[in-house]
Amino acid sequence: MASSKLPETSLRLELDIDALASGGEGVGRAGGRTVFVPFTAPGDRVVAEVPEAGAVVHGELVELRSPGASRRAPACRHFGPEGDRCGGCEWQHAGEAAQLAAKAASVREALRKIGRLDADACGWRPPIPSPRPLRYRSRARFHLDRRSGRLVFFERRSHRPVPVADCHLLTEGLEGLRRVLGPAIVAAQLSPGEVALEWSDHSQRGAAHLMLASAPGKEQRSRAEALLESVPSLAGLVLSAQGTPATLVGSPALRHERVPGRPAAGLATSRPDIFQQANRAANALLVEVALELLQPDGERVLELFCGSGNFTGPLAARAASVAAVEVQGPALELARADLAGTGTRFYAGDALKLALALARERQAGGGRFTRALLDPPRDGAKGIGPALSELGVARVVYVSCDPATLARDLRGCIEAGFTVSAIQPLDLFPQTHHVETVALLTRSTNR
Image 1 (spheres, rainbow, N blue to C red):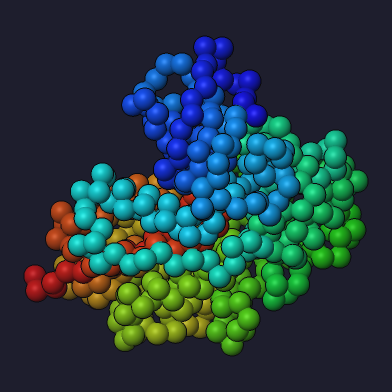
Image 2: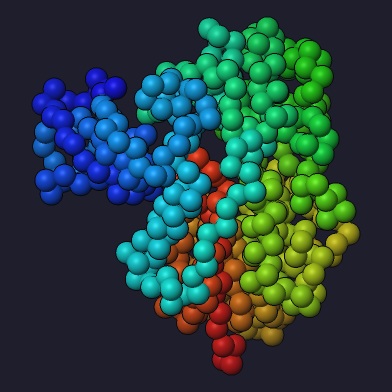
């Protein structure tokens, strides 16, 4: 099982795996050394091949001497050291309880080390599991393997394509689209570097984003139209290249139920070239938790990093008013079109700069916000604390996909006068180390 990528001066260690690390590997200790080993689970006793030098090292699994109680057989034959080592998953060999525990530990550790915070003193809540541990992704990004004619993932830590027969993370609709679209792209003589797919169970159709090496011309558009015609389950295509505007073919904007199985809860529009949560059932729980903590009913809400309106629609249905901020682009355009007539005010621009501008407006006698919600990208919202303080809001909900930047930004908000009153992790990404976290910040507004 050992990888040839290890240095020639390697050795074999027998060790017990204590935990799952935030990078996706199992972690154990032997002779004072910390060893990270992929495809291992808590409680496993293993033999690993590791570099000879180093106090903290990454090794390769050689032998599973005895399995831990948290280990299970992976659902996918492409997963693990005996399979194709597909990089789409990390933890299929570990049970859901072990995965949740690891994700909770990663959030708590980031809060302690980076935010200098005691999670229990911050209103810690146990992590919420995904409604579905498998078949949960309604969107994903792939590489085109022209040799096999398939849309594939790469092998773990490599660029070797793994021609997966059936991806167990994808919803049935998305997996069906992946299977037919790869050969169809090859037949259409298109050569995208990457392909992002999205599927709508509500519409029973999908859309694709083809990332090309150069701006699409007349010939590529013609081929894209032929591709669209050949795949009945495909509603539309987005063609793009670095630094050029997107070209739309067909109708790539898809309608999704905000709460799967409950169309009466409202619909939202998405496109495969903009950010949207892939796990729609778990996303509905995420929105529910965020609004429960924010308490927006009858309040004046400022939403930063609104994207295509994931939280904006539910906020508009309950708040007295909503002002939503996002950089100019297709996500903001979709949100504006989706929520026209709700009274939501949209602002195009940098979230931090606009928050500071709105705070100055308030100080000059302008309108006052009473609540704020922010859902920044992975690099967080560094410096947002003073802006939120100047806005005078009593409650802030911060939604994060990265524990490290969340902890950093919570520390900045505390220094600006806020208290962390609740921390709620959610598992939107089963079988991987990724975790979503919702934090509630509160403060007195007597200032």
